[in-house]
Length: 283
Length: 264
Image (cartoon, rainbow over all chains, first blue to last red; front, side):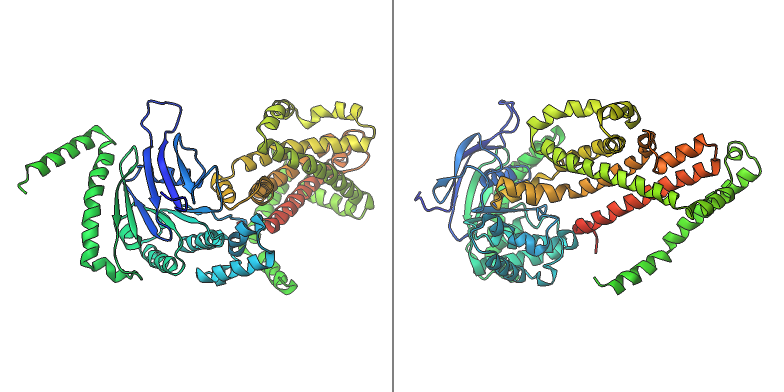
């Protein structure tokens, strides 16, 4: 792989706690991202997606393996790869504008006036001009997520990571946010790693779909989603879309079953019965 | 915000249901007290009735010396209180930020904390050169521990999401302190200040027993020694009202300093 690859994850393993016999969250997890593409990482709940994001962001150290941004190994958190999480991390004591301007202001790479100008422009881009002097607690969930997008984008990160950013929003807002995010991506073409646990969201957004296994998490499949851009909601009813969806669902279903069975003996029995029924069916 | 809007707001608040309910409660307490005292009910019968207190109050408020006591107490309290903030807030922040500092100082703090301010009085008299400084020291102690503990608690319970986000966005250690830890702790600092302010008025009597010749605590104690019972009540209520006003002031400043906590 050439040195200029935006993100390379190589053989990451991670285990929590001191018990070395415990099952690791991530085991030998490897993948690379294509530059200026939107890659969606999907997997059953509890498969280590968030842990992986935390490792790439530099918040957690892996037990083995390496993360490289543009060929350079990451040592800690940095503004070259920014993450937006499900729970808002906007600073409650700063207004929308102050939040968006925070990164470049503490990095002191640009003059203050220029930063504030750019921040105001981005606040406008995410549709929050009238809320630029409001505090996060005065914004709705969808507005908070858009403010966070602006706060990350102003730094022009090499890699944007979004960890289930629209989870917890109501269905309508969530759909609008997905459409809005697709448009934003298509205009700016940042390199994006988007974590999702919802198949429709994943295929609607993705250029590439990475499917992750149940614990210990690693990438089990890579699917190119060759749907036309700009992506419009109408794509959700196209035949190609349904084809991608059934292909992904098949992969995910097996993993989801494993995740489900891991919960209890009763669930494991259910899964065994389910598998037996599948085998018994004439195909 | 303009003055006219503030005036309208003030009028709205003065004639609100909240004010009405508070006034009714106070009136009921005074009425019960008056009746209980006049009809020699147990316990209440030995306390002078509010009408007597009011007549003493009327006479006494015309006397400049009474207001001098108010002023003296306020001066002492603000001196001791501000000293407690100046030492307590940085110390609390240092203990929250550095594990070594916390491990080093916490045991001392926890041994000194349960000692009531009254028990400090003899040491305060011996230790400090002037009476005034001894009094201010006892008041200082009243507020100090509450302030330190609130600052530590506030600074240590900061959501790690904010620190992580700040680190990702390129903050240095200095930025983390000034732009994240300090503002995140500010609400706890003001809670500590409001509670600490209440405690300083609680200890003012003990403090002014140190050969004080002025102050509301001294005034109350001197009234008891002199056998002027209605005047004791005047002194007590004065301390209560002064405490209420000072805590209210702190809360008002806190509201202005932490605008993000106000739902608009």
